[in-house]
Image: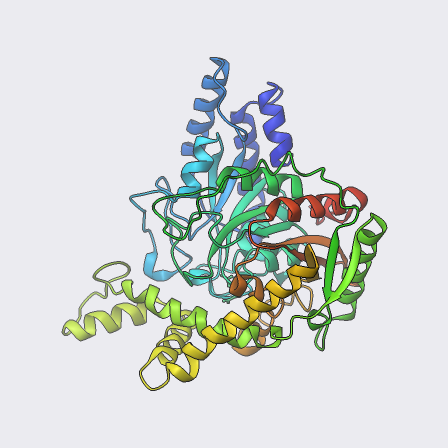
Length: 482
Ligand code: GLN
């Protein structure tokens, strides 16, 4: 299957019709997704209709947009109007949003065809896509292993070549970690770069939507389409969107890349360390300068994240009460039972755990000790990044301490699952953009990711460096056996 850029070029040149591209994609989903579990809904008829419409408009000479005819899969916590948006939760089973997310509108107006909605951990809470209320997403490199999460469906679908590209959401690593586990590229933009309008909220001060793609060029293409100010999201920032693709060839000679020992401590697998260090060597050979930096508060990132994210989740998920939104219990005894039974029946164990934890850290008497303290720690972590970015242009690190783990290995141990987010949550707490790019395989042939992060709104620099890395390495070209 072609990449998004190749598909767009082929459609523009008339070598492939949008209908052909979409047909290939939905056929591949039908043929292969039964064993992967990446996809929750496919809209074959709607997608083919949209593709036919694009072909007709192109034939009439219309200049539709940079991704005309490109099939895109969208994580199922992003609202679309032609298919359900379930957040992989029982409470939203069959829910069809009356409005589309800003990113969905931008994709469609740039000519993309939304072909499918992808699997995720319920409400994006998790690191393995095992908490999906429907089925887990499997890793196409080894079907007995997780695809990562929460955007595990988006990553698995791109890795398995059943869609050219996808969107995910990232609150504490949910784009970058599954990208690392499945050998694809995942970008979390700066907080505020992409509108969250129509993204079902998990942690509103952390959530960002971003691309999941086979290479950095595609990530730049998709970011150019989805980024931009939106009055419907008060946290989206009104600043110009660069043409990220045009910036990709910026040289990295002299670029100062920070390496923090705080990211390379205990718990990091040797294979991951070795691959990331080899990635850093490649960047140095290309002309970048490696500089040691410190992020002394990084060790508090997981604790801080799991207070802030659960606090925000407990508030955001209050609306799924069977009255405003979500599943309603069949025979409530009274109003109290209506609320409690609806929520008990609608939510899975991980979501309930987060709601309880979040409600606790916000409760009177504990607010100062937990929530308020976490906000202070968050400011310190942000300060660490500010200080580091005075000395360096980018920071490099592993994405995850290990490669993809076996399905079931961590599902009974929430703390072990949370620790998988050790290197990713800090970028969300600080709001900086960060990307995961494939940088090798471990002894079992499982993909490893390298993370690069940049100062706020410097996605152009981030993407250019990641692209230069891909121009001298071929890790991103490897794919799982079909
Ligand atoms: N794994 C993290 C969590 O469980 C991050 C999830 C996300 O980024 N949506 O909260």
